[in-house]
Image (cartoon, rainbow over all chains, first blue to last red; front, side, top):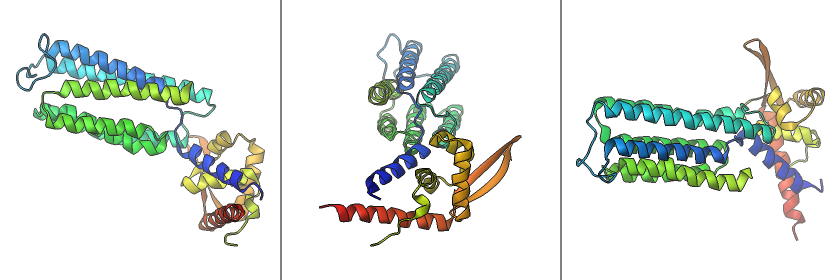
Length: 204
Length: 97
């Protein structure tokens, strides 16, 4: 009974460890960011080169060849990011001696992927209907909402990454023509910054 | 003094089990084992103990071919845990100079 404070700390730690997915590695954020930046650079050469990478209706994509190429590129980046996140999480879960697919991990993935999948399908509909101008802001906004939603099931810091994506998404929605730049900032730069901060804070 | 020190939670494994079930609707045997780092027999006896005081409920099912044993907290268990928490908090408050 002398140890009331210790007991409370014990309770708190168990509640956290049983509900939060702690195997997410900071490095996977950095890698996802690097893939996205490489992808954005390739996209720049396809869409804008040799003009600067912005501008509304000075250069825009109505090219039936470039657009499918961009979608394939985006899917490759997505698969690479998810693939490295999976491998690195597996590695980290071994290091911190926990199973990857514990109840907390399942809830984290569900909270993340429900908005991401709905957003992905919605963006596909936007593409098919020709509303290309709102595709970049929509991906950022759905991704940001997914991160904020999932943040309660992992280390809470990830919600700041979510807020960052949301702000960029809103900016991008009001300033058409800057889609590629906001996209590169959100999926590229923010991921690298967030990933390295998480790496230094938790993984070393 | 408000709250009630519950003997059922005197043991740290049982305290941990109940803490987990307060924030998880259900939790299965293997996940308990992994998180608490205890042996099968030890865990089973503590779970049985809590089950006997009707603090937790057991639900057995199958996931494919593997048996899956899920546990959840009963209302009695949640109430008892809250009183136990209250007791601890008051104890700390009263001992503060």
